[in-house]
Amino acid sequence: MDSRGQDEVVVIGGGVIGLTTALVLAERGRRVRVWTRDPVERTTSAVAGALWWPYHIEPMASARRWALRSLEVYAELAERPGETGVRLADGVMGDTDLADVESWAADRLPVLRRATEEEYGAGPAVWARLPLIDMAVHLPWLRERLRRAGGSVEERTATEPAEAAAPVVVNCTGLGARELVGDLSVRPQRGQLVVVENPGIDTWIVSAGRDGAPAYLFPQPGRLLLGGTAEDDAWSMDPDPAVAEGIVRRCAELRPEVAGARILDHRVGLRPVRPAVRLERTTLPDGRLLVHHYGHGGAGVTVAWGCAEEAATLATPSTATP
View 1 (tube, helix red, strand yellow):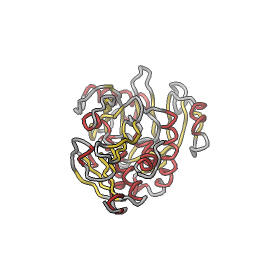
View 2 (spheres, one colour):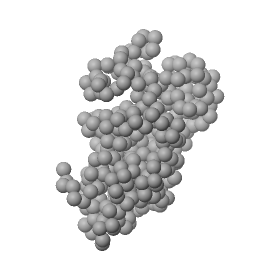
View 3 (cartoon, helix red, strand yellow):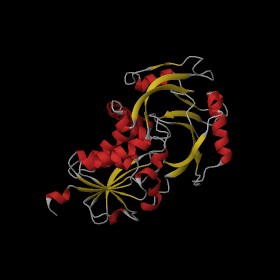
View 4 (cartoon, helix red, strand yellow):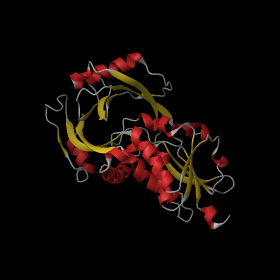
């Protein structure tokens, strides 16, 4: 195979992790094709509330490093919110101690302080300015930037990594890794949310809930996302009316004005939770390079850029295995 062929990479998986990894590779000069089972707009990433914050991901030390690198990228993208879908928004992270956040992100966040009782009266909380991503805009933007970099996206299902005819294959299939590579340690964590007309809320809020049931409100252009749930090993993609009612009730306890908001949509996604993110390289039976990059739980958007850069380095044959 000539040197041009050696630059070819197939990334399997078209969610935010797959697209971002493919984009980093393409902008490093690789010839990249993305295989995605579902259209980009119908991946799990499309359902994400998409507030930048390490959530349900391990190992946390690595996740925070990846998240801080991603924060740098999102801060740049937030200068063009209409184009990229990324903006910096103020809000309250409830049930969170300021000292804990300061220990890893104090000098990186433009706004970070203890929330007042008026802003969040249910316990300790921080007020912060964080990236909030509109996935309906961001995913197509990633796809288009990838195409401008010479990459392509194909709707194609792989049954095994070896099907990809390229010197390097990157497995970004998330929950699909259970079938693609037989990794049963990656499991679904079901998240449901309710989309409503925004009654005028312009700040986000996240709460663990008094009964342990989470609640969040994320204002997006033209709508307000209400969540959420975190049901382990639940596979149903059908919205549960009782769950939706509970979401609206919990969110109304935080912001009463949402109680009568008109419901626009119900959404369900399955987070690919794993004991730890699998980011490693190995080889296929014929000796070609295979990089695994999946299991990001509820933090795929948060860590996407930092993690993608490490995956892209692993996908370079001349790079020594760490």
